[in-house]
Length: 541
Ligand code: AHR
Image 1 (cartoon, rainbow, N blue to C red):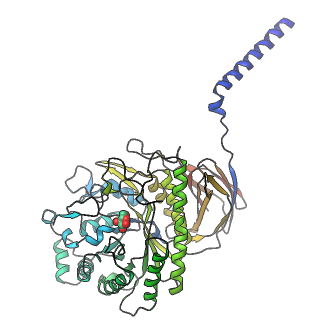
Image 2 (image 1 turned 90 degrees about the vertical axis):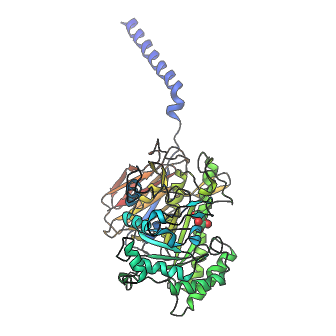
Image 3 (image 1 turned 90 degrees about the horizontal axis):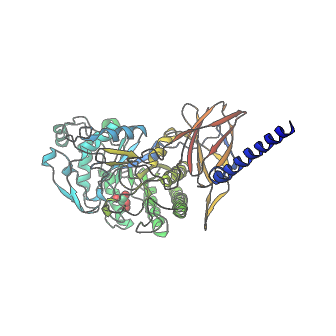
């Protein structure tokens, strides 16, 4: 018996040794210590509400630039790509899902060289022009006024028309608006009817020029101000349904960044507005600010490392300071905040993709861009009392796009998913959030580890967005909710294996949102784990 017990004991020892050897061999793969989650307490009191997060903060921008319009939206009625009156069905369906509030069109720099008459009438008779700003390519004008209005109608958005101040005239712009909006039987209305749209169109927003200090005419502030007064007076919306409550809002050209010359621009326009007589007015002042780090854009949009991730995010957070500065100037002249600050061009601007036409501003869109989008949307939401509009540049195939297309193929970018996850924040009421999550450091760059906003929707549901900027460490959020019952919660998170992960036509779901588990423990206490480099949206009710 003793011998049998000895043999069995030796066998057990052998098995244990074998297991240890195997674990030793594979141990590195299995047992690599995963970074410990940082514990962060986050409190939100749903009874303490702030400004409305205007749905127009989620606006889009579509310029005649590269494949933004042609191929991206417009394929023509004879295309084999499924379309409705020439407009891609796949793109329309994707955009409907993110509830685009408005689309700014036709530019951009293009707007100040655009003559609307070139883009109406039978397609085969339209004037063919050039697009000198963007690659010097042919502009066929097949996508014009009616095609744009049809497109925004298909996606359920408002029109934000940017009129030509740089090389056009007040008469040209005022006739365009009459053509679009009058219900009376003028010659222009009859022409619109002959072009198969008898009913007046609704135009929600009017951009009085674009970057008139640069590509829109190289104007001084004073010169632009004189133009603004003229255009604002003469370019009218005649739509009878838009005369009372639903008036068209006029957006003046604002600053193109921070620094004394830009502050002076804001100061001059706002001061003039404070003293303005009844005959001209503006409802918004634009701000253009791209995340670019240095000019010309040199950062790669794909195949980059953590250093570039940290640099770009540091740069994008400057948006907050910029808004603070221009809002403070606006407050001096408009303490009641009647004039909105409209960030109608923002987003990441990287080096053109190798092999692409540099004038087409084609770039990839990675997980970094999703995080960048969330950080900017949160900045806008925190300034929602003054910032009531923003348009990311640009909607399809250009700069920080929502959608990329290649002939019949289409892919949704990481930025698209962020816009979709943020839909519940459209027109919700801002709710303050308090937390201290510490910092994330890479080299000499230190950033806040976590960013968060909260809002209450019309049904009383609380929505929370939490971004974990740290690409290496997860975060465990202990959430204390007051002001609502907080009986249940659900959420989804967007992350991917690497900061430069992208979606491609062959692998479209590398960066796509997935459900995340939120544990409600009663008494308004919830916990949720945030993956490194992630965007998470949670609903609590
Ligand atoms: O979005 C690209 C260009 O950037 C726009 O046409 C112009 O307004 C800005 O400089």
